[in-house]
Length: 171
Image (cartoon, rainbow, N blue to C red; front, side, top):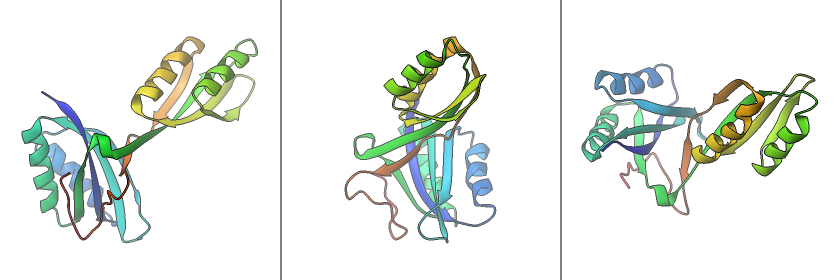
C-alpha cells in the first residue's frame, strides 16, 4: 500500500543541497509529491519538508538514505497526530461584476483573502490542509480558474516535538 508520509529535515543552507536530496529520490525511483524549503532562524540551516508515498519499507529506506547525506543534519518522520501541516495557494479566478459577490462569499466561507482585484479577475490567497484547498478550488471552478499555484505542504511538530540538529528522530 502506498501511504503518504511527511519528512522534515534540517539541511545545510548552501548551494547544491536541494539537488543532492532530490537526486537521491530520483536515483532510487522515489517520487516527491511536494517539497518546501526555507531558511531557519539559523542562517546556516534550511528546513526541508517533503511529502512522499510508499509502504513502510520504502519510507524507512528513504529515511536511511537521507541520513547518509552529509548535508542532512536531522531527519524526522512527522507523526500525523502530532503535526501541524499547512499549504499555501494563490488562485486567480475570472471575476466579472455579476459574479464578484458570489466569489467573495466563497472567499469568506473558506477564510481566504483577496490579495489582488481588478475588473476582470481576482487573486485569492488561502492556507490550510490539502482537503480544504481542494474544496476551495472545487467551489471556484464554475467561475473559471485562470491560474493556480501551490507551495506544497510544510509541517511542524506539535507541543514539545522539535526537530533539532543535535538529534535525528524517526517518530
